[in-house]
Image 1 (cartoon, rainbow, N blue to C red):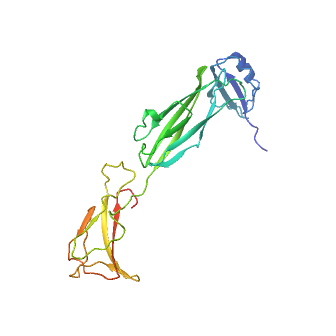
Image 2: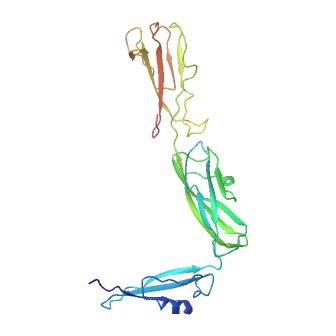
Length: 275
């Protein structure tokens, strides 16, 4: 046979009317009538306790919890979208939606206030406004970081009726950009010095004008359309181009080519970033 379920004893410590109503329940669940008429006092916290007695008469430790009954319900608050994931160059944008209880016809003006909860940098105050929409322009937030913002909405006729909620803004990283100054192809005499300049390469997650923190790897190949090989100087030694943002091939170092061009490439890298 299945064991007999325990008997439960409910009580309220600070309201006799609710205490009387609770004593009528002996199961694990209490169902009060709509509008909770037994909770006659508004805007107070009701202190409730429950114990259980098993079939052998053993009494459990009393569990305590509280219930607050408001005179009028505050609006519920949702975000669209529920969370935001952007890269640093994009605007972070979210809209708040308020839902009113069907228990009240009061729909006074809503007051909104955004605030920053956490994040590696401070979000400028002008973006944490007093409207239902949050818009943080691209270039404001730090890449590879997480920010938490909160919104508090209250009723204009009674600011004590308020709801607050938090949302997460995740900022991803953009890949590095490698560029060589000048056109994609050029014709030049082997008797002239060849200057290669990749200083225009950048990390789009870093502000323009700030140190980019990039390292460079230059390469040169000679291709005839079917096969390619590393470039060599006139002595037969492999061409060394260094690891700086600029490189130079002195005049008369490379042998002349006909239909097979020299192809110069640069790869940028940075700790923690994709090249």
